[in-house]
View 1 (cartoon, rainbow, N blue to C red):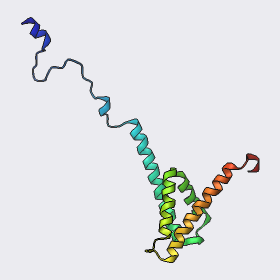
View 2 (view 1 turned 135 degrees about the vertical axis):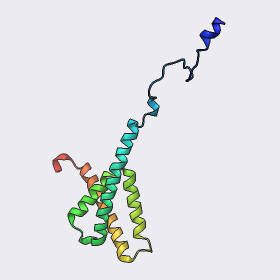
View 3 (view 1 turned 180 degrees about the vertical axis):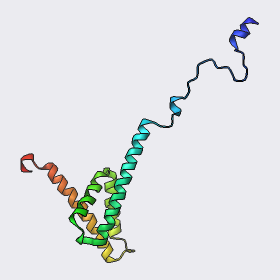
View 4 (view 1 turned 60 degrees about the vertical axis):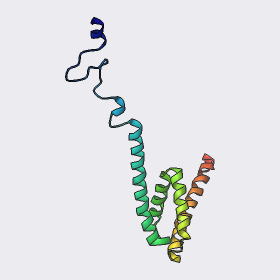
Length: 135
C-alpha cells in the first residue's frame, strides 16, 4: 500500500503533474523571429509594388512624354524588388504589349515600359563591368 502512494500522486481539483509547467511553451509564443522578418520583407515588397503601380499608371497615361524623374523612380522601384519579381514583371509586360484586348496605343505603352526596364538593366550591367577608373 505504501508503494502505491509513492507511484501515483494524489489528485484534487487538477490532475497531478510529474514535472513543473512553464507559463508558456516557447513554441506557442505569438511571434517567431523568422516570421517577423518574412512579414517585414513582405510589407516592404508590398510598399514597393504599390509605388511601382502608381508610377506605372503615370507612365502609361503619359507614354514617352513621362518625366525623367518618374521613369527613374519607377526603374529604382523595379530593381528594389527580388529578381524573381522583376522577371515576372517583365514577362507580364511582354504579355500585355501583345494582348489584343488593348488597343495599339496601349500595347505600345506597355512595350515602352518594358523597353525602359530592359535598357536600365543593361545600363546597370555595363556599370558593373566597367573598371572603376572609367566611371
